[in-house]
Image (cartoon, rainbow, N blue to C red; front, top):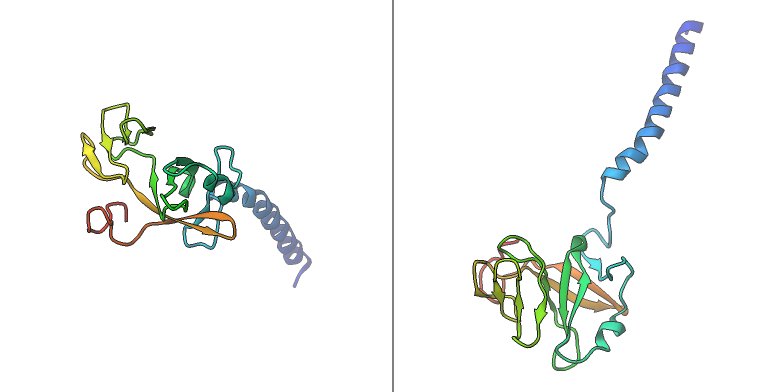
Length: 166
């Protein structure tokens, strides 16, 4: 190998290492962080991104609908059953009409979208349009004092059909 080839090789290697070290952080910035075991499951978090212990939600009264940050940060309602346990079904707080977020109205016993008037039953099925699909479900489980939220991929128990979000 001549001196010129050696210097070209060393210069090319230095440029390649410098470019790769500069582009790596840029590439990482555009990739979302992977959370959990890769199955899409995440730990429930509050609005600041801090994990919520299961005991904090379970200390609420029966029938409470707690709002947490679920999969991909989507606001998700968790429900405390009559037996004091967390329901295995969570409802994503996104109207199926145009994606608005909405509150639970305890007086009316339904979710009410303030934008266009859609109404949802406590299980997330549509009571009044313009929304034509039930709310998206997620699976909720308590694992080691943490609330784990997973995608719902089985049949929708409200309709008996394949979920529209799968």
